[in-house]
Length: 114
Length: 111
Image: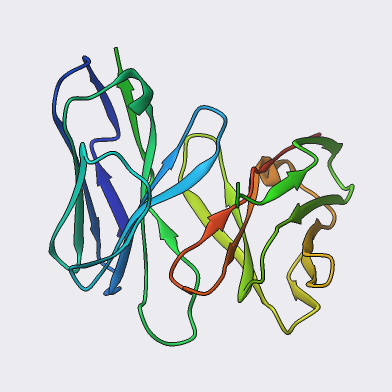
């Protein structure tokens, strides 16, 4: 049973295209995240949703639009892809309440923009 | 940048040796966590230490936290080849939901 899953695992596309990455978690968590890891392995938060509501929105170009149809899913849509968008994108989740702060990460989606 | 700094950037040791990696940050924190990332995989949570704790153990892992120096260290004892991975510290501040990650330490354990 995969706790946090992402599709696709690899995505190669040309500049200017629009693409989506999907994330699903079966842990019953309320909070989900999108992170971007660049070529130097720097990991930075992009967005966070709690029970379908956006709670964290870092300085991310508005070409990136997250969507949470329900609390188990958080998708990331990227418009007009640019070369600098090439990175590995990770989805993560955690319970919203209680004493648990650890996050559970998906396997990542490697996006290559040519 | 608010990103945590880790050192060393890379560490190569032999199996059985201990590995120590350090993390420094610039703000007050609620807690600090360490994650492992194997090549091509997602991050896996290892251990969490709260701001009012100074040391914590989990198996072969020992984490220390010095809030006065705004630094933490992760010690892996009796390392194994399977410990080869990148290790990241991550801390949360006012909003417990948001984690800020360090720059990472690449650990190579050779036989």
